[in-house]
Structures are given as structure tokens and as C-alpha cells.
Image 1 (cartoon, rainbow, N blue to C red):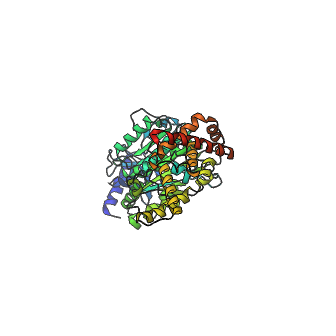
Image 2 (tube, rainbow, N blue to C red; image 1 turned 90 degrees about the horizontal axis):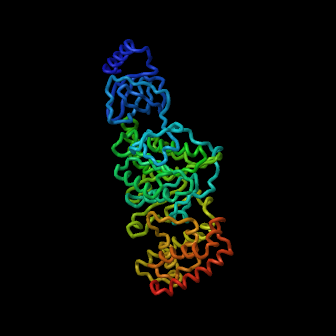
Image 3 (cartoon, helix red, strand yellow; image 1 turned 90 degrees about the vertical axis):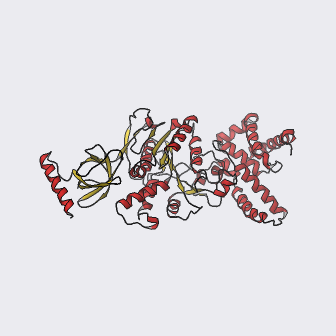
Length: 504
């Protein structure tokens, strides 16, 4: 042991003799501090993840245990911790408050309000690190979690309790997809938790204002650790958000949680690991970085006792490279991914979902029957379209069948375009997809397709309310309704085409 350490230990023993007769098992003395991390001699009874309190007012969490020392990361950068300062065990692991009063609030990684709207009275305290539900405690995913985004609900449906990764380059609409999913839960008795990791404060302020304007903040909890906060808070905030979500899930409620984004989470953990002098591995990440995210996302699921937590983690990649270390980890952990393509985004196809690289492995079992009936050939049509499009761009002459596939694919791409904050119910989606499947869009000019489908849905809802109500009640389209809808579509197409404003 170094002479400096021996002197500090001697000083610590003298301090114990002068003050209360505690022992090294319950208190310790700071022997080294810097970069938001401190080494403490003593605290031999401390456990991993325990809360540690400092006499100067700061707090920290134990993240490394040695024979004589513990390594503690600090929560607050604004309160200084100095060498020779005494630290005390709190006697429990880090827990955060949870309860109904958190709805509509913005809190930090410790569950403390940061929106200047007053204190929160918690209903319970939830441990940040909790044991995941066992297989026996879970039940298969059979209920749909609609996002209101047709390309996702039709091709890559998400079920309650599923974990679906949103992946893509910078500025491809990843957060926009997640926010639309939150906005679409209005009136559906779903609690939403938005976890912001390492984002700018201005972005969070705009997000909160948007949720408030759209009436979505009342059923949403925003958990934030911005880029200016200590690295520990950025590491801890996804687990804190999950703990809040678990409280509502254990009450039998359905929860949707967004992690935006786990790239920053992995970077924060890499920084902490390097400060703890753990051996770096691939891309300088520590060897347990897979466990970092697996133990987080395994806490989502659908419980046998009722309640579910659906996770939409976001990950940012560079140059469309989904084979990087963290993206491949998350792809293997989650139940599917929605890949947002830069080229599609720049060409005006938004949401820019790449159909070939996206998949939902379990959501198909939860998809609404009405939508499933109408999407049986959609994925094949899009695949044929993208394959033929590359030939057509080189001026290759195509036969009539290929040209028909090309036109059908172009119509499919057009109806899947959707503006931000525009949401479709499953009834709207099934009616729009019905028009594509039955060929009623072939006579409509491509530039008029969006207007045609919107007006058709409105026409059915207002004039043929019986059909609309039956689909909503049964969540299916019967053969009788399909026959009736064909007559309605023929009638509406004639009106639309004969109108001078929309003549083709």
C-alpha cells in the first residue's frame, strides 16, 4: 500500500476515536476523487448499487467493490467532494419515487422534479436495479400496441410487452416515430415514459411543450439526464425510467417506454468503465456492455397477472452500418427492429422505413385481423417494386407484367407516406390497404392518391357508419363487409374522378 494511503488510513482511525464509535464496516473516508468518481477506504459492508452519503451533502452509488476500497460515482457535479471527507452507508440500494403524481412531470435520474411545478408525493419507492420477471410470470404477446403509423402497424406490428428497436442514422426521424407512438396512445389507457439520455436541454424543452400542446403530457412521464449532467446520471436514467414504468405495470396497467437513445447510454458506461480502469474491448467498450442493455430490456414484457411494458429503444448508427458493436447487441436482444434509411428520408419517403431490413418477430401474433387480411401481399409487392426500380432506373425495357408490379409498388409506397403527428386508427389503415389490395388506386393519379385515401376513409365513416362501426367492434373485415366496401369504393371513385378539381 502506498504511503499516502497509509497516512489517510491513520487519519481515518484517529477520526473514529474522536467521534462516534462507528467501524469501517459502515463508514469510510475518501482517499481519491476526480472526474465524478471517488475511491473510499472502509465501507466493507457496502453492497453493489448501494446509496452512499457524504458529509458535504453529495450522494453516490457503489459500482465497484475491492477488498479494502469501494469505488463510488457521484450524482451531483455541483457539490464538491474532497479527500478525507467521511462517507456513510445509506443501508439500501438506490431507489426512486414512483406514483400517479409523476404523470405530466419532468424528473431527473433520481426521480426529483426539474420542471419547477412543485414537489411530488410518491406512492412507492422502486429499486433502480430490479430482478426481471421470470418466464413463469410472463404471458405470450397477443394484444396490439398501435403506433398510428401505417407502415409499422401493417408490416412490423408491435404487441404489448414487445421490445422493438428503432435504428438509423442521425436525423432520419427516429425520435419522431417514437413521439408519434406516444401521441397515438391518447385515450387508450396507456402510460408512457420517455427517457432522454444525453440530449440537449433545448430539445427536451421542445419535446415537453409538444406533448403538452398535443394533450399527451397528462399520461406521460419524462425522465431526463441531459448532456451537462454527471456521467452517472446518464448511465442510471434508463434504469430509473424502467423502475417508474414497472410501478405502473405492477398496478396492471399497460406502459410504453422510449429510450432516446441507448448509444449515449453505452458511451456513458464506457466512460465510467475506463475511469474504473476496467479492461477495454471492442471499440473500447467493456466486456459486459451486452449485459448493460440485456438486463435493462428484459424488464419489459407482458405479465401473467396483468400489465405490460412495451419498450422502444432508439440507437444511432453511422453511415447505415448496422453491424457495429452496440447496434448488433441490441438487435440480438430485442424482438425486431425498425430501420430508418437516410436515402429514403432524403427522397421524401417519410417515415423512411427500410422494409427489407426491418422486422417484427412477435408482433404478428398481436396484429389486428382487419389489418392482417389487407397486408398479406404488401411486403412482396414492395420487394418486387424495389427490385424492378433498379432496372428501370438504368433504362431497361420492362414487359407489361413488370410495369404493372412497378406501378402497384409505387402506389404502395405512396399510401405508406405519412406526415408527422398524423395518426391512423386500425380501421383507417385497413380501409386504405383495402383500396390498394383491390386495385381501386390504379385509376388515380399518383399525386392525388393521398387526398383520395383520406377522403375515402372520411366518406365511409360519415356515410356508411354501419360498416365502420362493425370493423371497430369486431376488429375484422368480414366477407360481407368486403363486398359492400367494393361497391362503396366504386361509387366514391366515380365521384372523385368526375370532379373537375381531381380529373385525371
